[in-house]
Length: 281
Image 1 (cartoon, rainbow, N blue to C red):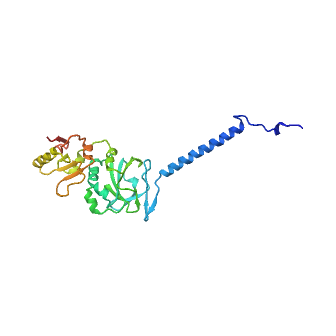
Image 2 (cartoon, rainbow, N blue to C red; image 1 turned 45 degrees about the vertical axis):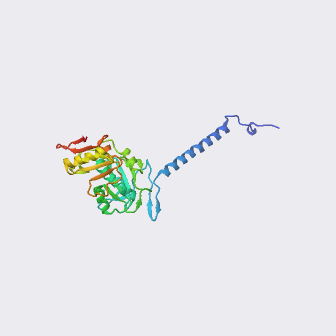
């Protein structure tokens, strides 16, 4: 019986044509699997809206762009959240009536007064309508506060802090005010920040339960009469003396802003408008 080369079945050698095809198919499916996993990971990081009691719940992560959602300014005008600033911005997401947010009110005041500038903004985004009395208590200009009017909840937990760059991309986030200090710019507060904080009053910076600071407060009273006392380590302003001009600064925002490392210190402006940092013995 004649045999023809075209009908002879040979076992493919190692590295032969059939093996090469199998390797290519395996490689193709491996690449496709990697691409599918990468696409799934990217998709999972996008803000995923869901509704709870009819309110859209949003979730953002580092690397997301904070845009595409309308908020309202103090005049009721709507704008995209990305339009708030074209400079690096610390967004503070808060909610009226939130006990954790209320506890940090003194720190919100300090954040805005000491760090908001032409180069770095601090903006407050309220999930819901904000009672005017709360805004008055914050002592923050209305142009720094915006509201979602209950249309969205930007986070599962308030307060939450997002740091975005000039392209509105989230570059860091935290849920703890204690960590916010690490997100703030390195630039030091200027004379206008001190004026915004206290008006024309001198400022005493001290530490809670510090004997030297108590003596310094008596000296400040004798020298200036009226002054503002910012106390590190104190969680809340004194409730037994509502007229006392004492603000709590548990997160050392003032020390960060003015580069302080010794206490007690008096901060005031000289006649030329320059900041004087005077240690009190």
